[in-house]
Image (tube, rainbow, N blue to C red; front, top):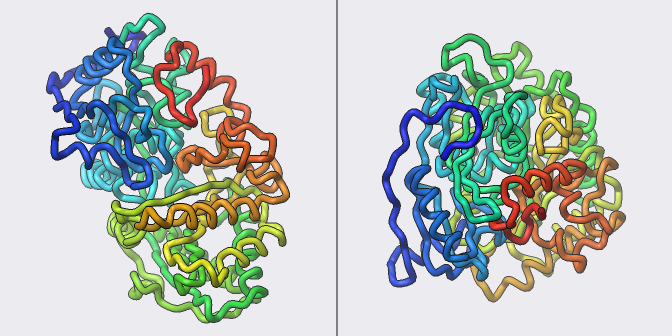
Amino acid sequence: MLAGAAPAAAHVDPATGPTIGPADPRYALLTTGNNQRFVARPEYVRMIHSTEDAVSALRAAATAGKRVSVRSGGHCFTDLACNPDVQVILDFSDLNSVDYDPELGAFAIQPGARLINIYEKLYKGWGVALPAGVCYSVGAGGHVAGGGYGLLSRQHRLVVDHLYAVEVVTVDAGGRVRIVRATREPTDPNRELWWAHTGGGGGNFGLVTKYWFRSPDATGSSPAAQLMSPPSEVLFNAVAIRWADLDQAKFSRLMKNYGAWHEANSSPDSPYHYLSSIINVGVRAAGGIGVITQVDATVSNADQLLTDYVAALNDGVGVQLYPQPAMPQFATARRLPWMRATRLIGTSNVTVNDPTLRAAHKSALIRRNFTDQQVAALYTRLTDPAYTNPRAMVFLFSYGGRINDVAPDATASAQRSSAFKMLFQNLWDDPGQDAVNLAWLRGLYADFFAATGGAPELDGQADGCYINYADADMADPTFNTSGVPWQTLYYKGNYARLQRAKRKWDPSNFFRHSLSIQP
């Protein structure tokens, strides 16, 4: 049954997905995600094909007392979906439609839809978009629940700032399964369930079977006016800096330039909120540091914004900027249709998009410029001659802008005063190299945050972690010696409210994993 006062969906597909057990040749594919370090051995994997299918699958698992995990795109960085304790995986990758729902006046997106397909369908069909991520194959299910960030976010906020409603299949303390629709409307009795999905993380409250998106400032009744429009063209630039041209002083100046620029331009009214940049600071063994920059080309001073930004990065560094090997044609900025640039960025990084690799990841949101100690830690670890894995890197993502124009408690995504986001990452293919690669990444992170107990502080120079880059080490006092609980690092002051939502919608803690909300 449908809880709440919102009208019922116009149509429910009764299709039933297959149940896949260990003897099925598809089993091996479906028991791991994009990170091959984590493998589950469930009794079965159930493919979900409709909302009613999710209801029946959840009811069967709950009645049998099975431990369940939920997956849409399979890009979870840690073992939240694929781990040895899971007895049933509910896989939503086939539930992947993208349509306009005239009944709610919003765009309906199912959790298995991949970001590139969402972009293509929304833009070609209605000329609209979401400010979502750059990795083309990420599924909407977890991406949205964790907040959702991309190259358009400085200009158009986070994905969840456009979330209007969510449909969730829940199970109560007595094992009763029901469908709940929750909207952001102030009078909706289920509004807190909507709020919990605006950054509360995936796999916490129930099975999301559909998201609806409508921008808060939408007007009229035309579908094209209900969601943000991306720029028709972007100015796109991709350059590289060779490690051979950098000594420690030049590297430090480059990092400090990046941090200073983003700190100075993190406010919503910055004239640079039309610009976003990704810097891939690879280890010395990788050969160089890549800088990708995208600017809304429809603003009159787009070329100057880009020129000034690149000049600010290189100020006092004075190194030559080379073409990036994967995109040499963009060493000189070019104007591209937004959709073409989105395809390019999403598919050009062979390493990140390789689904056969093992990986480890850590995150931080940064409010103010790097400290001298942090820059020194980066340089020491990235240039360590004993560490030769060329797939190790630290990504720096532009944050701030209009992301910071939202109150910390308006959504569950609490970090609303950051300047840039960091992703510490390495990837490898040999299981025998797990120990050395994990030790390197953990060592880098511990050194970088040595002054704050191996974790990003809150409301100071740093501002905690990003739940879509989930890292179970933050729940382990061996690595997080800061005294700040992992829940606070990810959710700050919003955690108690998330717990209240958990107690109401999942009182038996049926949906749980190593970083789940605790009731």
